[in-house]
Length: 358
Image 1 (cartoon, helix red, strand yellow):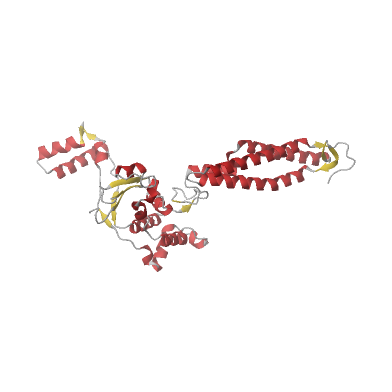
Image 2 (cartoon, rainbow, N blue to C red):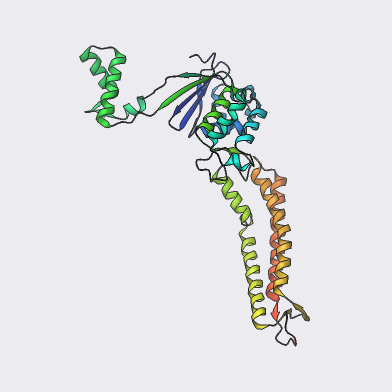
């Protein structure tokens, strides 16, 4: 097979895969190695060819120097596929709200969909027998002889061709060392459209799930269907969002306020006495009502903090304005919490009250 007619080559070994492609007449290069076909598919679905597919270092090795790799012709050529068509397939098969569809495995959804819209999944490719056992064989030996030495020895002793000698040497080492030869496949593509459709079909046929990260919204293919986030970074960021965006001072103040008012509410119930502030003894206060108001107002401050935090975390390169907005929201929230804590701790039981609260 020739890179001049099929510039994209996909090599698969078990779950792992390598994408090799020829960029603008340069020698073919392995642009990226992925842990799974799903990881490679995610790069296309999220349209992040740089730096997820080709690094700046690789671009410079090709003789192209630029501060904007995503503006180069190769970036546009990689993005030359039918986005709307692929989005429709993913929406129909993976993001449906229909319970009957979601009850089926992805491969079953795909095959039913295929029966009625064959052209939707069309792609052209060439499959080629492929095996590259050298790294595995070279890592082992037979009675002290390396693979290379053993094959040369067999070629001379048995007077066979080099290919036959290498075959015999490989089998001998595999048998002696109980070496497992991994399954390997190679596919060639002319256009990115054919490549992405093949990747999509592979994922569906192997019952893999395509999800959207609940934090950043990017597509990802999880190893476990229970995963909600595309990365540990997104999971940690969402955890921060759920726990005061990493602002520990706010978290501690919040817990102290809630604990203080809950304890006082229970004490008021047990003793049947109201609370008041020493500077205003005639104004009876119910801690549970204060806590209810606190929850309502806190939601507004937390929403402002989260919006500012998300703007910083989701931006590839946060601006100074975004960072300043977060710092301002954080300071405002902490100041408000401090005021609420001081108010809560200032409440005292009115032991001289002449009536019992409800």
